[in-house]
Length: 261
Image (cartoon, rainbow, N blue to C red):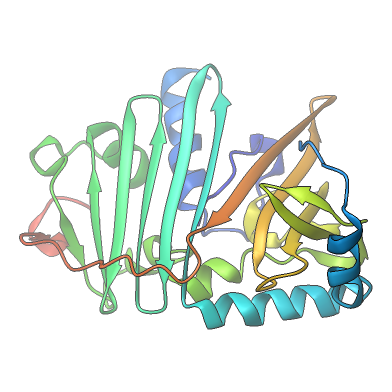
C-alpha cells in the first residue's frame, strides 16, 4: 500500500519495508531536496448507534474482518513533496495486486500475481530502488520470484491482507463522533500511527463505515515536522471489485539483468 513520505528524521532502521519511502528518499536525495464533516440526520444517527458506540478496538476489529470478507479494495493518496506531485494507487485483492507510484516524473509499478512480483520502473525509479543505473531494462516488466532477495520488499503492502496489516492505529484507541466522509456516515478510531506508515510519532485516525459494510473509508495520519504539522490522507474505495490482474505478457527475469539480486 501507499507509503507516506515522512521527514527523514522519522525513519526507523527497523522499518525496512517502505518501498515508497525508499523511492521518495532516494529521489529527494538525488534532486536536493481534512475533512469537511456534514451534519448527521436523525435517521442516520439511529441506524449507526449500536456500531458507533463500540470500543475503538471492537470497531477496528470489525472493520478488518469486513474488509477481508470483501476480498479486494483500492487505496490511494496524493500529496506534494518539495514541489513535486506524489501519488500512490494500489489495487489489492486476495491473491493479486498492483501499485502505481509516482513522484514528479518518476514512476514505479509493482504487480503481484501467483506469488511472483513483476516490477516496471522508469530509469529514475530503478536508480532510486536498486542504487544502480540500468536504462536497458527501464519501463520493462522485470520478474522477481519469491526466492529472490528483492521479493519481500516489493511484495509488502500489495496483497489485501498485507495492505490491511498497515491500516490499524496502535496504542490506546479512542473513537470520534459520527460524521460524513466521502458521502458515507463514519465513526473514527484514533491512536498512534501504524508502524508500517513510517512515522515515529503523531496520530492516526481510521474512519470506518458506520452503517453499511463497516469497511475502512479513509485514514488520516499527521505529525509535527520541523515545527509544522503535516498530514496525509489515504482513501479506500472499490471494495469487492474484481481487478482482473494477470501476469504481464512478457517479462525479463531479474537474474538475467545487472540489477542486484
